[in-house]
Each structure stands twice: as structure tokens, then as C-alpha cells.
Length: 245
Image 1 (cartoon, rainbow, N blue to C red):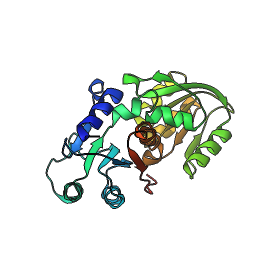
Image 2: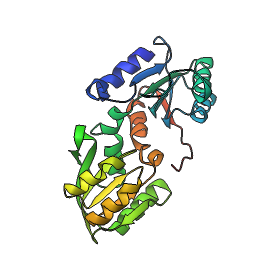
Image 3: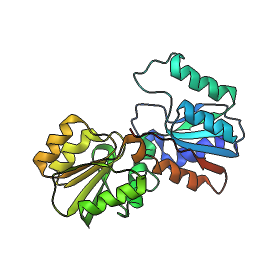
Image 4: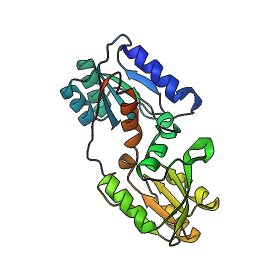
């Protein structure tokens, strides 16, 4: 299919216009008339990912984290220049979807992490539906095991909560600013990617569980699901890179 058709399909699915984001969503680099048969997918548009996509013979690369961010310099220097040069040199298009992919009710990072952990479907939670809330009965030890088995690495776990988790909130990636709000609204467990210094006291004082999975690790499942959704029409490949942060 043409790149412009692929972008239109993704726009209809993810509805980026509904999200006030800190980056452009959609086509970031490339020719709209480019024919796309092979689509590489990854969490972030790093040079390592771009080079692997080129080596595989991809026509386009779809990522959760793109190249351009609000407040960052628009000048094509340093790493940004290297990434754009590699994309243009190989005629490799780049599409990126940030908050629209985090918050999609089925294919989003929050939803997919919950499904992968065997929690079922959650309810929209937080400002602008930033996360999902889950009602469950699960020991923290079982949740640690599920996360470790899924990611191949143990999470950072602040174990201040009850012996059985009943209300969990998931906000993947940089969800650390939502921790106190979730606990104030009755959650006894919060799962995210990044943790920050104030989160320790928030969990301790709320007598709740707090899990940090790593930003990259927590946000790989939405883009994987998107590749499966597109797999009937395109040859798709997820590019996994080792990023513990």
C-alpha cells in the first residue's frame, strides 16, 4: 500500500487529533507516495533501530517514540542529524504515535500490558484517560512473577502495600507523576515505567505497592499489537533492542 494510505488507516484507528501531545503524531519523515510492503516496528526511533530496519529491507518504520519533541532543538545536528540522514539515505519512512498509542483502548500500551499480564480489560482512568484501572485479587508476589516472566527481567518493586492487590492503575512509560493521584483515589498498586524520588514516600505513606518496569520495557506491547493489526496487509517485524531504562 502507499504510505499515505497507511497513515490514513493509522489516523482512523488511533485518532491523534484527540490527544494534546508533546510531539507530532503520524508521518515524520518520508514521501507520501512511497510504496510500503515491509514495515518495521520498534519502541523508539534510535539510530540502532533505523539501521536494523534498513538491513531488514523495510520500506517504513513505525515507532512509539519519534524524532521531534516539544522544546527540543529543531536543528539537524548531532544524533538527530544522524538519524534523519540514515532515514533519507535509505528512503525509509518514519511514522510515530505517542499518546494515541499509549491510550488506545485495545491496542494501546496500557491496555496491552494489562492483557499480557493476564489482568483482562481495565477501565479508563486519570486526566485525559492517561491510564487504566483494574479490579482484581492478586498477591504482589504473583504480580512480580508475571512481570518478570513477561519482560525477562525483575521489576523495581516498592512493597508497602497489602498482602492482596485489589485496585491497580497502569500508566506505562513516564507515568510517575500520576502515582500520588492514583493512591489518593484508592488504588493499592500502581504500575508504570519510570519512577522518581517522591514516588517512594507516596507509596510508603499510602501503604501501597509501586512497580517500575522501565520506560522502554513497559511500552513495547502497543507497537507489537499494532504490527499484528497491520499484519494481514503488510510484512511486519518488531525490532527489539536492549534498553533497561
